[in-house]
Length: 591
Picture (cartoon, rainbow, N blue to C red):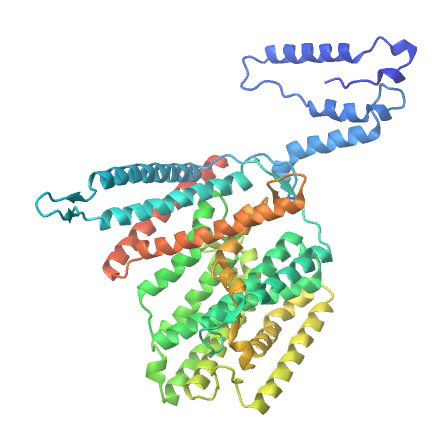
């Protein structure tokens, strides 16, 4: 396509060249090219954007006819973006990339959600009509109202199920539009200290403002752990959207936050199995469902591998490791080990065996990769055709779950022997011991921060992180729990976010960040502050709604009856086998 000229600068010999004639020539050329390609599948594509670029830059031309160098460079860059980004897939949130074609599994998911939405609307319509017909009527003889006898429990269960999938279908449509349909713009992340630290100050002020009295004053009670998850998740979100991973001190401290989540995984699940002694199938399926439901749906709808949402595979595998360690014979629980040192010694042997296995796998990358490259594990843990990313993520926090289990064991043993003072307002130990431990904790906390801030590179820091991250985690726990007044209060603001922390972590991938976390979603172009407010509000609301949907479905999909549960597990196994078969067919068609 011929670009326009700057008529005022043309020499006398070129005055006959006008933009009006150039437009006519371009139209004639396009018409001829398209008419000659009628028998082909697609018409000739014209790089028309070069004309728009020329209109903006032709005034910088030296003679009014030839374009300046900047114009040619811009046109070449756009042309390369259009045709090369699909192959190169650059790490850039704003790069032009074509909308990926729908896979067979995505089409089936669309049909399922569409049928769920239609079914829910039909059921709601029928229910309302029946409700109108079954209104209470008055008995003419007694003058009393008669209420119709109806059995609504089956309808209510079906309605709840369809209502959950109705909401989930609308939410998944929003996910797809945000991060797959090229409907909304994306922008890149540019880290500045103010973009990270100012929001941190804001949330800390809000967290302190919403301080309330705790219902329990035990160490690491439920309200406190929810608060802990909440403020950590908010810091991680700010870390991701501000691109703070480029600043090494922040990166190292956020690595401790991720390790603290895994520490809570070890602490929480060990405490449950040790106290309750419940190793039943129902408990395992409930935990696995709540952890994986959203990620599995997103893998289907967004066509992403399971390992892409790395944290969920991480906590899932560690939960299974904790379960296997404690459930394998002999099952040692608090009730059995009460007052018997032999059983405590047996549990310690189990934990030492676990630590030995972790150490062996951490120093045997080949063995680790062979294990997780076996089918069907490879379908879950491969990313870009190999399991190296999974190896890296697992190795980075390999000891912290064990640390959480050991801490739970020691804490529960001390609590059983009434060594700890957990009354309201009481320090955790005697005043002298509490003051010494508090001083040591503060020194350790600050020492770790100084070390993390002085690291030279990520590789060096990551090598030491698995062994030393527990220092700051334990220091924080003691600082938070030794003073009685600190243990007696919690932030309801942070606790609210803590209860949906998993959903927040997963949802950010597509509806807050964008381009698979490489960029930032832009719902309102030209106004960054308003855009971040609106997108954040929608993001948090969606995460909260998905948490409610997951809880509702967990109660319905995972029954307490073992026979029914086994039948459903067989159905689920068949469902995923079908998905794997369809995925294999899809891969063959692509190649």
